[in-house]
Length: 331
Ligand code: VGL
Ligand code: ZN
Figure: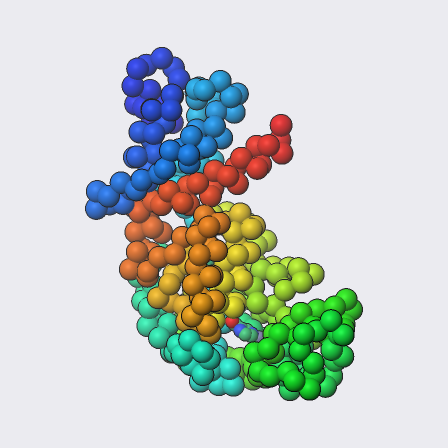
């Protein structure tokens, strides 16, 4: 750390000014093909302010130690988890085969690039999630007669069609999109697709297991009533970076990525390892993740990122704003 500080303190005055900090960022945010990623001035100045905790316009050695230990170290050597969302039979060739949905994408197409990543990238942890519903689950259109539709629902029980969103009068009111019966726990449809590689020591997370609330995200149910064990387990492993892929892009993959960002993880969507339901919703999913300082990449970019050879400014910025929140809570 001291060597690094002195190397970047070009004028040797014992402080890093904005220009010297900019040089650090240029060294950090680059790939191993000589590309230096640009960081706009607003973001650079915001980063500098975050680490200039005494707000005197300079970063001293003490301030730099936080920057080094909590930021630079993670950027250079992230701890990475690979989250593989709901790559289950029903979404590929079963009752909720996504190729019948408006985007006409084929769930099978994720198998090869996901297996390739599992074979070639050294993730610290791998997680497989399962959509895992009881037979009377609220999301099944077949179960409409089991629950009362609320008077505020724009769609009535008589008019409800597949993929519509209704409001149930339940305890309290709950909005729910209607899907065909799918991923019944322990059924063939809920099994992982047979050609998907399952690595040793992977974690398995089951979601949507409660009858009266759906769960798109692998972290929380749709009403944020209960949390899976995932973030607890990731924290135990000191995971910093979450790589997300699977089915369906605009439903469970998107919801999981949103939650990963809101929990505070540096979050990466692997575009060609996701297939979805609706083209516009897929576009919105990507835009939302990018707006929240996540990144969307192709699978051939992942290995260098996991190894810390390709370091994205968006993820550095995301980590810094999370640090800013925790520093503000301390003071
Ligand atoms: C999913 C619809 C219903 C998904 C789960 O895994 O994306 N989609 N349940
Ligand atoms: Zn489901």
